[in-house]
Amino acid sequence: MTQSTLPSQTDGAPTAKGQTEIQPQGCTSEPFIQAVKDGDLDAAQAIHNHDPEQAVCTRQIVQLAAMSTNVALLDWTHSLTNDDCSKAFLHYVFERVCLKSGHLDVFKWLHERSYRFCTPAMFRAVAEGGDMDTMLWMIEHYPESFELSKSIRMDNAAGYNNLHMIKWLHENDFSFSGTAIDIAAQHGLLHIVQWLHENRVDGCSTWAMDSAATFGHLDAVLFLHFHRSEGCTTVAMDLAAENGHLDVLQFLHHHRPEGCTTAAMDNAASVEILDFLHDNRSEGCTDEIVAKAVAKANVPVLRWVYANKRDLVDLDAVRALAVQHAKLEVIAWADDCVVEEAVAARANERREDAGDGGDYCNGQSEGSSCRGGGDRDS
Image (cartoon, rainbow, N blue to C red; front, side):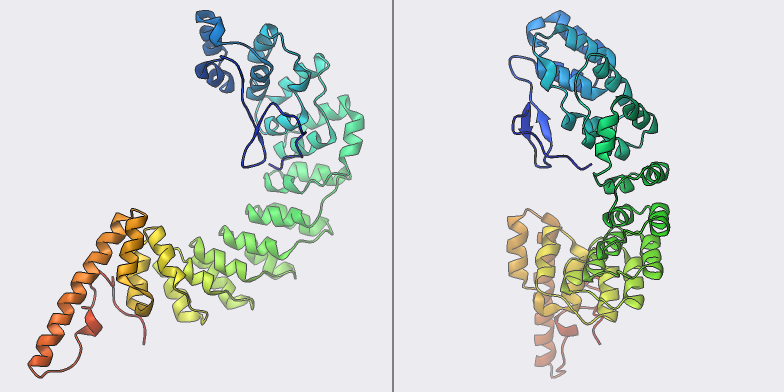
């Protein structure tokens, strides 16, 4: 869920996702904090009764209780705090609460105590949560914020699989942009993509098909291809290959002109993907395919590269990289290849000494543990 811009003063530390992690201060124990986060009133009271000094109800604790959506817990912690809680219930806290069941009871509790928590941005969060009862309650009690919220784009609501809410927002003149179809396509919500296409004029971007392909939503890719003109970029095939969506990859290859880049093969998720790209595309790959396969301990891909792109595989370098990343399966594979190459070299020497000439399967036996099925190059 999209977070609004946080105020400069918060009750916690910003996380990597831009949200705020509530960090109760003082001597409050971790078990008590966890009980409050879990909404477990019985556990929280038991800890408090055993040792009140380990269960101090600060403003941050009350905030956590509200976020748990357990109103009884909220009421209990609120009754025990001496802190001013006016800053505990700022809107950015409750934008996350809107996706939890029971949040309307919390909102009613706050409203009855005149805590100011509702802003125009809250209506967007409620729309994403998809709870119509909450939406109607907020309109009744916060009509000014409701009117102001209509200028806020509701695109993210398209990603929460609630067509009824999307229709209601449309009928009540809320704002959307082309990003709405992009988001619905990314989540594979074809019915929402179709409805937005038929009832809105906002359009979409190439990211609609790119993201649908990325996450393997072939039905969304098909709809966008046959009903819209934005198309896609090379990202579609590249990421379909990386995520192992062969059916999507095949469709894009046969029906779209954008193609792919070397990233498709470099990041291919499986041998089946590599086979298709190798047989049907000309972009090829780079030496990155080896490094990435080692990092993922993807031995089947390494076998494929060894069999089909032998010049890209430096076994010493592969082994060193595998040791660096502690990829034991890759180390074992590289060691097997070194042994098989040595055996093959000895066999070739004996054949040459005997006057037979030739090469012993280019240094490897067919179906060896290094190649895993043989060479596909013609």
